[in-house]
Length: 149
Figure 1 (cartoon, rainbow, N blue to C red):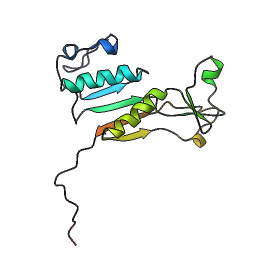
Figure 2: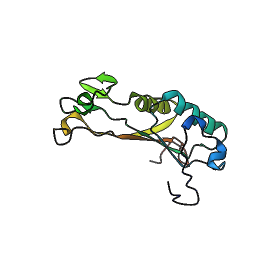
Figure 3: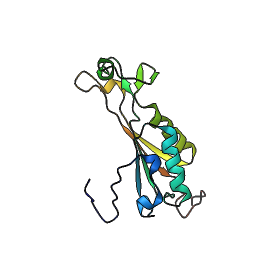
Figure 4: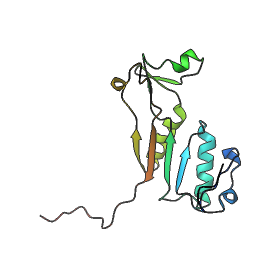
């Protein structure tokens, strides 16, 4: 993988083995989670948080947070894949990222989900993996709730 800029560090190793040194001890601006393992991803997040490489300005992106809707979501079934959770006639192909989304929301992140609804799908548009963008909520200054009349 080719380096894209001075602060872009292509790393080809298991996420559980990544150290702050691999990131040249520089703060992470954007972190994409797509490992499909809850504990491994949370361990990485907490290790980087402890080393101050993740802070309130770090943006987290969680891939595969949408549902696959019936009757159009046949790809995985035809190929012997696993579906994960069944939720109101839809399937969560990667429940891990959906759980991480909820985890980060409970940790004080604002979460914006980019996903689709069942009625948007048909045989020509069977599913969309979707993603969620998470940013730590920080009240904007000045912070006051008493507005002038």
